Image (tube, rainbow, N blue to C red; front, side, top):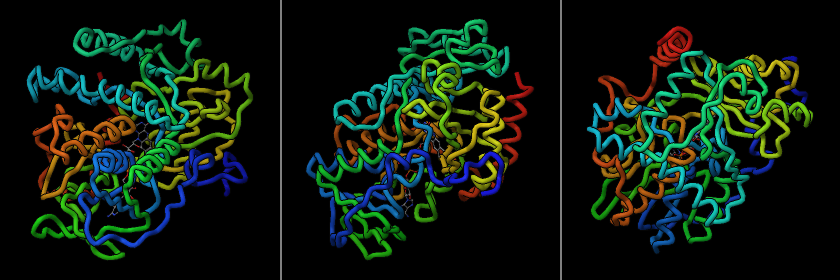
Length: 432
Ligand SMILES: Cc1cc2nc3c(=O)[nH]c(=O)nc-3n(C[C@H](O)[C@H](O)[C@H](O)COP(=O)(O)OP(=O)(O)OC[C@H]3O[C@@H](n4cnc5c(N)ncnc54)[C@H](O)[C@@H]3O)c2cc1C
């Protein structure tokens, strides 16, 4: 490849796949009939499959590509506790109790994934790293402090402000105006995690068929006929777990989701002494921009893995790679000559109200719209969704029954994305 920043053997696949390739999945004949058909083998679909198979249901997972090939093997692996809208905004929409319940559920999702990974013994380089959030403008430091203070006693939030003078204990950079630490946030190797979910759900008895595209869901008496490019399967219940890869297969869901490309790079190995200076605590990190950058060290602490949005319209990882590198070198000038070993992208699903959604629509079950924070949300809500299908109390969430908004004439093609990204970039630079 032909950019001075590209390593000779630069790959356009996620760095995570080097250590955790997509699993070889045995191909079996499709059954005539199942209790539950699940479309999509990412965190949502596989977590739901695991719960349902362990509850004795006959489960079939249908994935058009390979295991986790959507977002679930290509993300930043950062785990937080957040719901995007703040307390005031949520209170306006759902009342104080509804707002508090939603915010608390963010913390429940963080606890859930920590407990789950440990209980299942999934080898995914899980680390209780804590998070550093850099204030990209001076007023953002104060705003963060006020925001965290306002949540004290309402949610189990813990944080520590880091003034600029002490910032080098956290990040070897002068690019930020101080920051904050969220000690309970965590990180994992996303491709190892999804492979672990695959192994657990297959061991629990779920049948998982990759390279199997679902092309239709027809209502029939007693359930649905799920039509694939390999034949038809009758299912009593159908779960749609397609998030940022949702298509015309489910138009009612597609018109409620905004697919947005998120881009990542990994660097070549960096000397240990430099890494120790740039990221002394090996935390997951991001900054206060709305058009956010997120970054961390590789599990072996030898490379930077850096992500964000660097284009108004979707672009090619060969173009996004050098642009992400420029932002990274703005934060850490020491890295201006380090080469890019991997550059890739994937589609997250935003929603018009910036909340995840779970429930039933047009006769299918769904959980999606994690707004770029799906490592914990997809796992937690995938588990909730399975309990909804089982009809038990464990399936209840604070998101039950809220409306899942769309916009007039919107069908799923976000033609307005460039304008929206430009607006948020302007707000990041000049906004209040
Ligand atoms: C670059 C990037 C960085 C990210 N970083 C973070 C992060 O640091 N922290 C965080 O919390 N979240 C992050 N996310 C978001 C997170 O990865 C997702 O929210 C999460 O993986 C969603 O999981 P899922 O199972 O719902 O969807 P996916 O993993 O996207 O799975 C959906 C699957 O559905 C399949 N599918 C679609 N249509 C069909 C069909 N018709 N038939 C069969 N199969 C079909 C797709 O092939 C796909 O595999 C990031 C995402 C990206 C792209």
